Amino acid sequence: MGMEWLPASARPREKLLAQGPAALSDPELLALLLRTGIRGKGVLQLAHEMLQTHGGVAGMLQAASDHTLRIKGIGTAKRAELVAVLELARRALQQQLAQQPVIGKPQEVADYVRLHIGELPHEMFAVLYLDAQHPLLRMEQVFRGTLAQAAVYPREIVKDALRYHAAAVVVAHNHPSGCCEPSAADVSLTQHLQQALALIDVQLLDHLVVTRSSHISLKARGLF
Image (tube, rainbow, N blue to C red):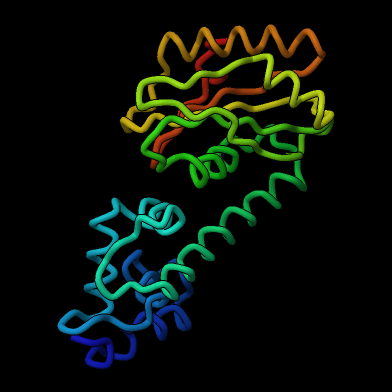
């Protein structure tokens, strides 16, 4: 069934205009981007199946970004639009973090990191470099590892902190398993990194472990 058969109040576009975007479900928002379905499948059904296949909005957008989005009827143009939406979300969060101190905004920092690495099938270690007032200078994805571990070298992070004139850093990595509980190796690395950064008077503010939908702060846990 196409959307033309729905009552006007139930059509995503009309519903958005009347009630605002928060009133729409994930499939309805995605249907607005897709605009049309495929033969034998309405756009709302297509949107629902896409979200189910990729594990929700974040998974689908990450698949679009990684060029792994493969669903019949989703061509190059629609994939490009989905990638553009993801990039706009990233830039919006980056702009917020660059204009205000990161301290006191752990959820925004975690959301920003998850948009970059939360959906990856391999472990990725990222570093957010901050200036003296703690707005974001830049984020670097610095080490890629296997599902089990990432080879992280504190001296490389120290070198980049000096290069970017950073006063503080937040580090983060993803757990592709979906469980964001920190390991003993995560804690040990954090402590070594804190000591290495202290030698150049750079503060380690936090170490976040992220998954697709959640995160844990080692700082909040009192692990360093």
